[in-house]
Length: 140
Image (cartoon, rainbow, N blue to C red; front, top):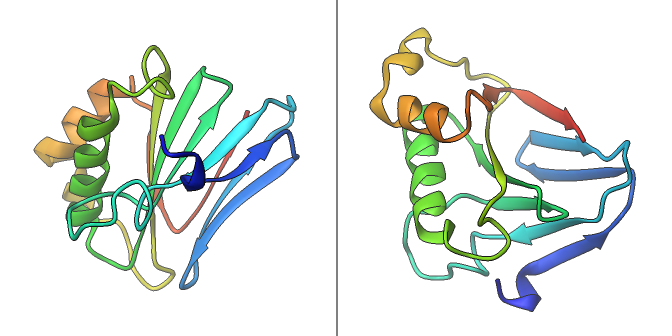
């Protein structure tokens, strides 16, 4: 990962990512060293499919995050594409993988999303550690 794309790297208690009303919060109760990495507009600047952020938790977990307005299927695709492009990077290799898709306040997650082939693939990669919702949070 390019050093300029690591926006935060420390042991703070709370990390957040926000975009147009969508919020993801990562509570760092164990005080791990966590890197907040800007994917969209930094790791990948070209007009290519990618997610917004990745959180690297002390070389143990990689959390891919997309903050999406309403298109859940597009968000899933962005998470999958980013994972595929980055899976060989040292920040990800050997890590537990989590996927997070935060959708806008007025949008709901379609019930059929779990039948989506990309969702099923992400579900398998992450060992069922995928969340889709309005206001998402995790504790490490």
